[in-house]
Image (cartoon, rainbow, N blue to C red; front, side, top):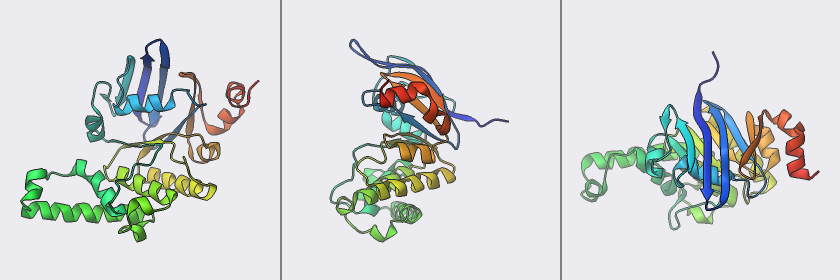
Length: 254
């Protein structure tokens, strides 16, 4: 029996006035896979991510996640269904430690609200302790626990990216959307992030990433989708994508 499709995108379209930013894109992501979306600037990659995550409304199409339709749902509802995302520009909460940043990600899985936290009810204190312990485990998993009490914004870029990954994992996602995880990283940091992404997949978490760094994409992806001017022009395993004449033309010119 083949792998189960966790994410199924059919005829996805986004129009901004006269501009068709995403045009009838259809592909699926198998459970437990790492799938990459590549393409030149303006290809519609981040727009597509925003449509999947609920931060943009689609013009047409369908996005089914674990059997349920995502389109029309708000970002917090999409997150609650088990889909977490990171952004091209790292978003750390300033003035908070690495550990506290990860704890924020656990909030979606916690029961305590503002009033119960304010009155320090016994069970909220226990839950807070559990959130702290789980967040610390994630920092250990991504090998940055030594920076737990360091202000997150003072960490090196690669370490901030690892904190961001830990925060996304704190939401206990089934699918992780990574928007340019290697953006702003040097060669060493990029290789390290690639290793962490593979480690995350080994936990059973499916990964869909948008990325410009071809060495990273070719190294960690099971499959690659290529977009150009909002349209999907190729979908295959990395070695086939590298040899695809249409892909070569887009990246290198005729």
